[in-house]
Image 1 (cartoon, rainbow, N blue to C red):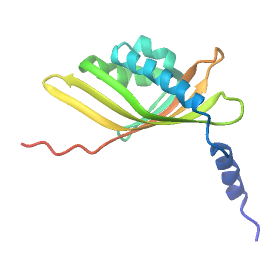
Image 2 (image 1 turned 60 degrees about the horizontal axis):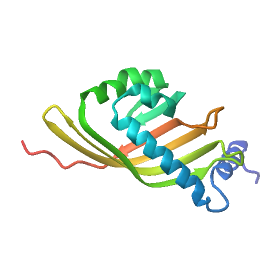
Image 3 (image 1 turned 45 degrees about the horizontal axis):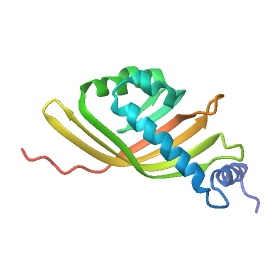
Image 4 (image 1 turned 90 degrees about the horizontal axis):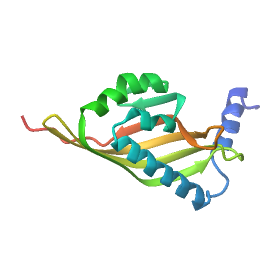
Length: 159
């Protein structure tokens, strides 16, 4: 019995995404340093400082919704959220990066994040997981091409 062409395509695609060996720590270190700069820009609450970190055609999966493109995410999601936050601290930890392909121009990254801020009278302390797909631009800088976050379930608030 011959496998269906779609099955072969899936197997071929997955074989490109899963490395045959462990990534050198240098890539994870490079991406972790890049994420630290990203976290600093994020905590500044200045979307212009964040612009160089995003690909113009980024896709964002967050909170069960989808944002398509940096301009839409910046203007209708992230920008308004950042304006509401005071005392923002944003960090990534447990960063692991894997190269996608041999050219070193793309990678996927898994990490844990923590966001602490005050929104009005409410203190926010959110933690979760993030998967990023990064691509290098023509200047060799990483850009977020896709981001998918999930947050840990929060305990119910007392009424």
